Image (spheres, rainbow, N blue to C red):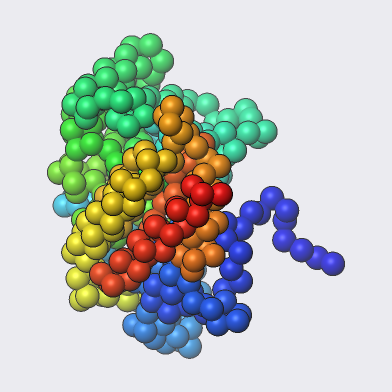
Length: 418
């Protein structure tokens, strides 16, 4: 009997049959609050009618117009629409399928454009599982284990984590930036450094937001040394953090922006954006791919951007994210095993720790499993697997947030008592 690879581990026991908004239904028609959103992908909820209609219409006319062979109207329309929300000056786009591919494309562009080879990434960052993207990833050894040697030319700088180090934000940012400066004189000389790549919120690394002053400090250093600043918005983009882009909280502009996940409401689509002059420095033949910019995915992305705008989903992410964070902090106040609740917008993590402050993955796992039994689907993250994250679709309502918090309260109580 042919089966899926045993290396694939399903986070919940649900066999999904259909989806509607923030809900998934199994084959017995049991309804689950889906606070995973396909790992932040179904930004407009499951099967939003406008996204479904756009995809259905496109399937009936043109499924695949390979965009280095022919051009199709949906890709031109999507590019124009993204121009309305991208940072000023980032007016050239290259489309691929996944976040990992987009990360690889961004690094390739940076190396071509600067003539330099090194890339500085950050401890706890996740950028993908392909060989180049994995070389930039340190959210956990499982991404890199057993496949070395990794792509050379990567150096890791500390990421500011106030909870982990028990420090205030100003002190932690100063420490991280000082270590970054030290790295430039000990491991990766500026004249050898093509790019800095950073997530506005650590994703797999534990849902740790980048302080605004940290991103601003990286921007200053990039400008000073002629290094490109790549912001990985794969998970934080398209409204997830309560701003359209995660880096908007810091008031900076990257040289290269990477977007994927929530861009097309579940269809595989990703892109990198850069300015005209920078993108023109990509070497001939360095950008391409069979499925990138697929017509159906592009149509879904256009509809997604329409829904995000017309339904005010960026504002909703900020408003409901605040409501969710307040609810989660009340749960944490009742259960000291949750040491920290953090995040931005609808991207929140609950870190489980022991009385001694050590990672408590066992209780996190029990709470995660109990939540599924209570009809609330969640995911874990963090190097130790002790952070339970919540990333509902951006269409989530106040009533659904309150419902999720109530289920979470029950799940945590069960996990602590068992």
